Image 1 (tube, rainbow, N blue to C red):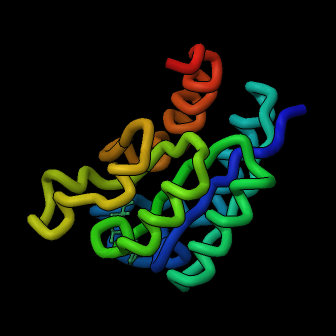
Image 2: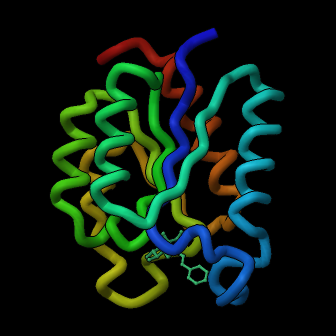
Length: 149
Ligand code: CA2
């Protein structure tokens, strides 16, 4: 089997299902993990699912991914909109990244409309709730099949 796809989650995503269900739905992060892992198993890929509230830890995991992952599905939470350090780490990882958000960030406050992650990503999926994670996995797997340009 190829190296795992890292599925990385940033700040406050541990609160999923506990508050703001109108925006983020009722699934907990444990539910998201279960959905991701069962979809991954059904399509024959391994995943490594993690969440942190720390920008530094998220960056360490991106560094780790460079040697240990085949790609990254990333919901960086609010660091999406603020972190040049995360952007630098993603660029240096030289791995395909698919950015995912539960909510449609473009239908929300203007400060959510800009993403540093998107500049280092193959593509972005947002607004489809938890299903966005399985869509992101499928998009990454399709991307692996493409010959390098
Ligand atoms: O829509 C997404 O997935 C976001 O990445 C979620 C972030 C937000 O800052 C991004 O703009 C879009 C927030 C993480 C979730 O925060 C929660 C807070 C309270 C209750 C549930 C989730």
